[in-house]
Length: 282
Image 1: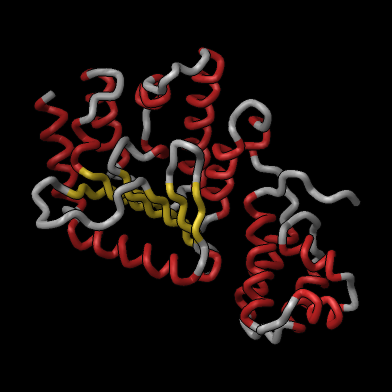
Image 2 (image 1 turned 135 degrees about the vertical axis):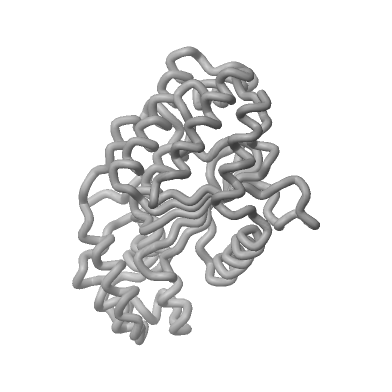
């Protein structure tokens, strides 16, 4: 079977975790290949997600690395066995790959925590607001691409709500005042945000202007909680596409950032009051 040209986010994560497993055991690629009885090139390709790995090979890999973390091994085996195609694959070739990867990350996560300070969280955006955020880009997007991106964002929103995925949003107050598309679109968006805040599986908290110091992160963040803590992922939003973090020290750092943000955010009820006040003042 020829090597994969474009491994998915899930496939890359499996390879990354197997590489971490090998490195934690202090094994070289050559040593592990001898233990498994396969060519060292095959080990390299498995870790780079260029080729797949069977559940049997996965467990042999873990055993050779003396990995005793059964919950992690079970979670990786479930990922290996998942051959389903997500709805986002319909957009392959139409939208940048980064869009598809974010949808895949959201779908695979047990729960999500977001920190936003430039625009409303994607899972909360109305269609008018979403279209306006994409419409501000320079140079302007062609109409068909603008419509495709907006439709994709609405599909993401619908899918997460269908699953009732637990989500927590920390929103910097400036987001509530920034008028993408104008006053009416922002007012509609704020009313929609208030409605969202009543869902039991959605937590919306505002970080106000008058905090003593800025929480820490100066970019939009998504913390996706995996089936086990080792499979957590941080996505940093970038104009050039999403950047993913999964190293243990990175995850620890971003958990600390979110804990600091949470300590500075208004309560849910006070956040609703502020959102309502701003909507009424527009």
